[in-house]
Image (cartoon, rainbow, N blue to C red; front, side):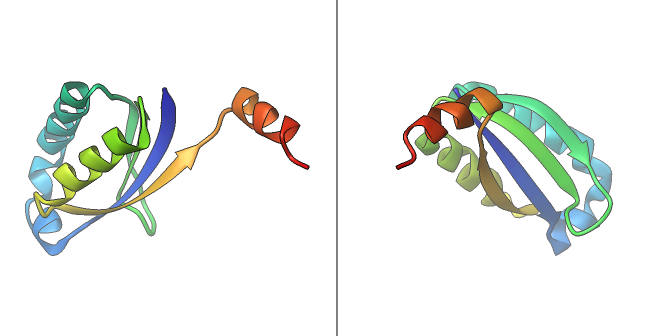
Length: 97
C-alpha cells in the first residue's frame, strides 16, 4: 500500500455547510473503503488548509479515483502528496546513482 497525504481547503459551499463536515468525513472514509483504500488519520486544521487526511491506497489510480470522487461533491479542493516511509526512502536511496 502507498501512503498519501491530502491537504484540503473548504470551498464556498463547504464552509457554508461546515456543520456537516464531520458527516462528510465519515462519507470520505466509507468511499475510501469502497475503493480499497484506508483513511489512516483525518484532522481539521488551522492555517492555509482546513483538513488533512492520511490515506493508504493500493495504487495511484485508486487515489486519483478517491480525489476526483470527493472533489466532484464541491465541498473541498485538495492537493495530494505521495508520502514515503523511512523504509521506502531507504530502498529508493539504494537506487540513486
